[in-house]
Image 1: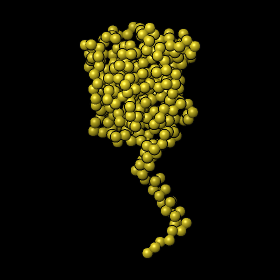
Image 2 (image 1 turned 60 degrees about the vertical axis):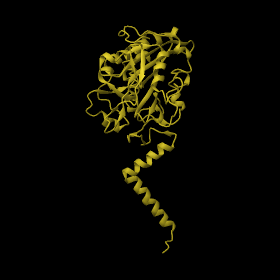
Image 3 (image 1 turned 90 degrees about the vertical axis):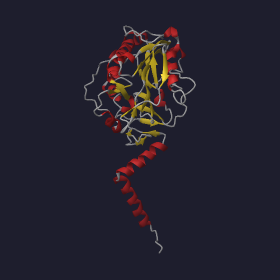
Image 4 (image 1 turned 180 degrees about the vertical axis):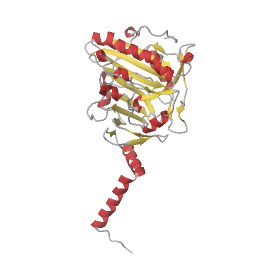
Length: 346
């Protein structure tokens, strides 16, 4: 028996399909996930989700791209992002971080690894005029972490690991919007509480003091990159060992990778004078305080450590400030004063 498809029948069929997509939650997830996999960019105004190999569903609100866009480049020195972290960028997303309700302002850039379920680094800048405004707003303890319900479940009842910022909230404490922008899971990784709130927090404070007391007064903007690594440091010879795969938090559920170590690189650049100073810090993300080994190191040494971490899947070298070779110049190295004694040779 043949059925004649009239215009009315076709219209009814289309309406049935649309109704199914808008009322069936599972259909919505599949439909939207397909959009992210195919598209180049996701707007913060879309209720888009993606899914990595661990089946973590993550709604996105900032601009998320498979390629590096102009909004991403503005937070790295010379508009040239760090290089060498990956050869295959299939599972990498480049995020121009925004806040809800503001579709035009970008606050910093994040390189996010879908396989790890955490960021590789966040790149940000403290402008000369902003360095005198640290502490203008304060954390209340009631800030809401945005965008990733799966990660929220991962941290429930967690006693050992903090939701540790890459870009610290206090480093963006010169306005409510800037501070709010840091409270996203795409800017957070599992950090041992004692490490996050102890020596690492001390270094974050000293970096802000450098911005206020030295970089800004001399006309500089401070470009900063904070990230994770697959290496564990050891101090018998100042070396590092790649330890992969990294452990995961909640391996039976919403698993995300736990960094072996954390690092920050900074370069103070004056528009008219070039590089004024630079520094690099790295430390083990470990519970045992005797093995933390947090230390200020040469920029070249940090890049060597990071290259060890990505051996087998990274590039032939890592360059954190490719547009500014002066950031790696030993003569520009800044000593972050009054810090704990360095445990590792530099």
